[in-house]
Length: 144
Image (cartoon, rainbow, N blue to C red):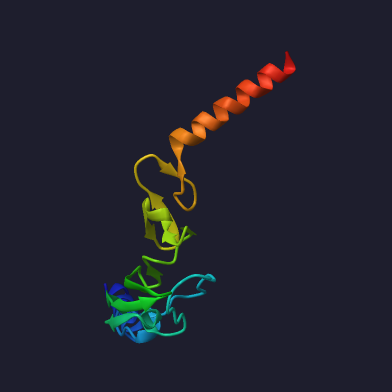
């Protein structure tokens, strides 16, 4: 019984002294080895919460929103992610519109809506299918 108690005291002591959960710092709000994000707006990867949020008890508790003019347009940028590393505007564009206006930007990737497809949501799936069908028909007619 004494051995278990001594081991338990040792383990509790280790957790209190070395665990980020027992004594979290703003360092735990910094993304370790962040990937290169070429398009991310106003990103400061070496600062807690990417410089876009509040670090509380070792976690980014609230990511900010930025509102202003960018490229001559009024925009509202909403930051998100575990380290506030994502935003809603840093995605592929078509004709100047984020996700071609047919999807939403989710951490650098377009999530297309309706029948729209592609990395920028610019392609209508029905039109793409029609073009592919026409190409197949042209090949078939060419070979006969």
